[in-house]
Amino acid sequence: RLIMSVISGKTVVMSGFGKDVRAELEALFAAAGAIVTHSVSGKTQILVTGPKPGPDKVAKAQSAGAEIWDEATARAALK
Image (cartoon, rainbow, N blue to C red; front, top):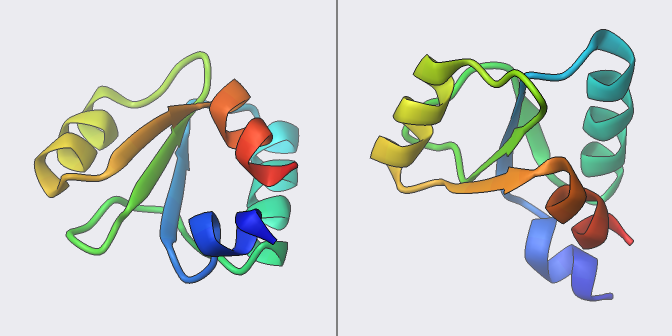
């Protein structure tokens, strides 16, 4: 499946979501083979942002060269 090649093995961080949406997205990404972490580092490859992302996380992700996805992009990739 395409999803496995896009997400599998990638380090993913969520920012700006409520607890329930974050938990749902983390579970979906983990099921797709992603490595879900809670803080941005040089290993972060995708930052998924919700309505209120932390500006520090966004800045760190940009510095690390990570892709920054909104919720709609993330959900489309997970289909």
